[in-house]
Image (cartoon, rainbow, N blue to C red):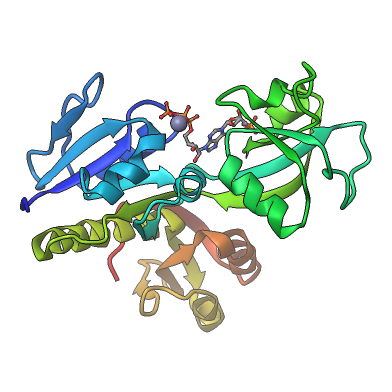
Length: 285
Ligand code: PRT
Ligand code: ZN
């Protein structure tokens, strides 16, 4: 067993750029990532393999790579024996059934129909759970055109904005899987490889937390300070510093993106002024 981690990522496609950016945000230097099959980092014991996304679960389960970044849609379709270590928050999409826009859809609509998909395993599982008998047509690309050319009555395909379905006269009627990119690992890593993975994970989590949080600075009149502080969680509690102008303080804190606008409105309503919001690069709690 080697004392470095071999990471498989998508060579070129929707996950490639975000996968490489995540590594860079984790402080892992990668050179010449274009047009290469593999590369090694000079400042972290990691080797990167660039592969088709469909092959990543198998490479990781076979131990050719130790870890990999892949969409959950591919992971569950391939159904290989690997472990999911972390959700990465990018490559978000859903696997959905879609039917011609004009059709009326109900529970029995799919019975006996022809469904085109690149995801036969996940589609069959969904149909079995619903006790629907349908005919699957496995095609590897441009699934959305199948109804238009008379090859199928419905499709089961990945959707993100929905515009591809719309442009092909289809409507989404069932979401069968919500998906995002995940970090997966081989089930029998050596102790040293697990240690390296833990180190990488620590960095990934710090990057993810930073992305979901913003640093906020504002000026508050001292007589409103306690109400304003009550609105701000902070990592422990907000930092409060006196301003040069008497009767005012500067308050610093960290806000989660989900509650962000709500809290900003309340801060303003409580007399906060000069509110600055800045991105956080890394966040370690
Ligand atoms: O060559 P390789 O096999 O590696 O790549 P690929 O062509 O199989 O995959 P790629 O690069 O298209 O997608 C890689 C992964 O990105 C997928 O497995 C998903 O996990 C994720 N992902 C996220 C998506 C989408 N969003 C997405 N919208 N994958 C594909 N799409 C396609 C979808 O198939 C449809 O054709 O985009 C179209 C729909 O998009 P909207 O925005 O019009 O709904
Ligand atoms: Zn693919």
